[in-house]
Length: 229
Image (cartoon, rainbow, N blue to C red):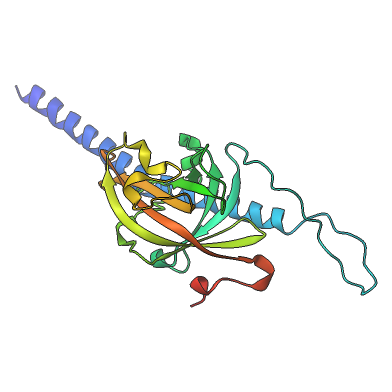
């Protein structure tokens, strides 16, 4: 009997240790790897944006950058950076194309098939609430009027939240429609939808916020007012 009790006790200790290690992995290691991956994505974007086709000097001695037509979003690749002042003035995350598991581990994920950044339609983006850097951990703090700012290297896009956080179920795919029915919008426009899981450590529901494009400005004119402390 003592042998059985001892074996059970040792098994419980082993299982408990494995659980602790797994939780530590979820809380710490995935965060470390995700933060590193997101920083790498942002660095790559900045390097990409700092280069371009340059025309020879004109009569004034100035150089101008050739403007190309917008490129398609490539699956798994970052194409923009998002800033949400409500979540902290140091909060910035890369936005990648597609919503695959690997993409969500490296940043925020653009729902393929929804609008391009700044264009008419619904630019929809998902992010983890917890694990993999906890990008949307404080999602419930978002409020109407909050700014969500994005840049694609040439333009600043400032969206303003109109509704949310709205709680729904994962099967409610209408939240990313061009004109989301429950958003309060009634006609086509330039919208933004952000989605994440709820509760904080679960995925039985989704939290949603909807925003409209409030303003744009060229990158060379400086940061938009929403990002100035």
